Length: 398
Image (tube, rainbow, N blue to C red; front, side, top):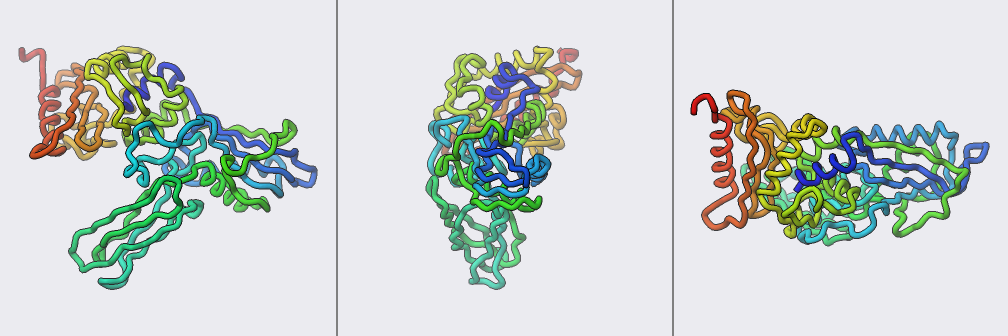
C-alpha cells in the first residue's frame, strides 16, 4: 500500500511537495515583547519534526524565529492544532491491539517524534528486583506502570504492553535477564497536538522566552480568534523526494498516513483493482491485485518525471532499509530495489531486479493467509529464491 500511496503523492502533489507548519497568535506582540494571548502551532502534516529527522533542531529553530519576531513573554498558552485532516486518529480497520505500538501511532496534522515516545528499559540490580523503566521523551504525557521483573542471567526476555486508546496509562509486563543490555521501546502517544505543544513550550523556555500558560491541544482547549496583527511564521518540511526514503526504506506508517490524508483519503485513481482503507497497509480492509501493482510499478519506472526519485526511495537488497539483512551475499545483493510488506499471515515483495546483463525486470510477489506448518520465514525464503532467479536471468544465454 505504501507503493500506491507514494505513487499517488508523486503524481498529484509532486516530488517537491512540502508540508507547512504555521505559528500564529491570538494577540499582537506588544512593544516590550509581551504576547498576552495564546501562541498557536497549526500543523499541516509534516511528519519529520523530532527524533528521527533532526532531534530538537526544528523546534529550536522555530523558537528562535519566535524570539527574532520580538517575543520575550507569552502570557497565554501554547496550543497545538492538528485538526487540518479532521476525522479519526486511527485508520479504518486498524486492530485495537496494535494501537499501543509505534507503528500504529495516531494520525494528526501536527506531528512530533512521529507521535511516539521512547522508554529506556534496563534490568534491576538483582534477580527478583523490578526492572528500570525511564521515559526518554520528557514531553510525553504518559504514566508508566512498570511490572517488569529482573530474572536470572541467560533467561529469555519477555515483554508485553497494555494500553487502551486515549489512555495515558501504559502497563508494561514481562521479564528481563540480569545483565541484559538496556534497550529502547517506542510507544504511541495519545494526544499528538498536546505532545507537540509541550515540546515546543520547552523549546521556547530554553530559548529564554517566558511562557506563563500551559501547553494544550486545540481539541480540549480551543484558542481564541487568531489576530491578523499577530505572529504569522511558516515552516516547511523537506520535499517529498526526501521524505520518500523514510517512508519506503524504513516502511514508516505515519509518513504514509499523513500523505494519505493530504491526498484526501482517495487512491482509486492511482491503482484500479484496489481498495484503500488507509495509506500504510496496516488495515485488514486494504485490497489490491498483483496486476494493479504491476501496472503501477511499470508506470512509475517508465515515467521520466518519476523513475529516479521513485527507485531511489526503495529498499535495496542486502544494503539498506527493510531489505538490509535480506539476500546479503546472494546475486540479488545490491541489484533488487523493492518494497516489503508484512502483517500477520501476509508477506509481500514488489519492485525491480537489475539482472547481471543490466536488464530491468519488475515483479510482484504476494502471499496471503498462510498458516500451520508454513511460516513467514518459509515464504521469505521462497520469495528470495525467485528474486535471485530473476537477477541471474540473461537474454544472451537464451
